Image (cartoon, one colour):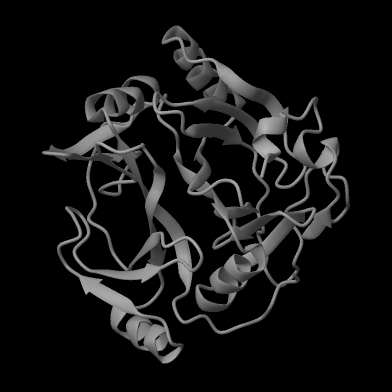
Length: 303
């Protein structure tokens, strides 16, 4: 599916936060604070809110007695006010719910259901700011979230047409990368009739030295890599993948492609690009699309 020029009902500009469920709240909080130096902003009862920096929260963890899930909800910041977005979404036939009590730090939230998965999408214009100590270890930001969907074309159309995402790349006919800002992708989706919920969540390192620092810290706490380091073809980021205590796949990455000028339509040039200039494209399913440095991890492409 090629990129379409459309007028979004609610134009997303940034990935704000992602929700997780866990049977052991303290263990997952300890993973984030000890290994990645996230800061706990609020923790009460069955919930914990953690941040990478100035926003009130980027990760929300909820205790559950059921099988733990990643991406129970996703918060997206939009441009403009919620009143106009709410009207446009309803005019397009989408049911929404307005909440002012969704949780600390989120004063006004518009909730929309993702088609095909039922995942709640939290749309917000503003989120409370916090001040936390600076850190050389902590990721620079929450980078992207990848998810399984039963209908890839439907998910892509929903995010592009309704929420204003732009197409960045596709691998084969089953994995699409979408952006809402300059970064190559903020949301990516893998078609699957076998899996549901989250494929992986990714946090950005500012450079290779920072990535090495985080990996060394993970190793000191007995977390081993599942895949990487390597360089993806689509997006060209240097990647590493490991699992948190609940088995959620966590990517730590750096050097992701950026689309500095949407009018030009190609990614900011890098010497390791295959094409010059590097435009969004559909990649063949081969080692170059997954890892130009070495082998593919079959589990990461299983769908």
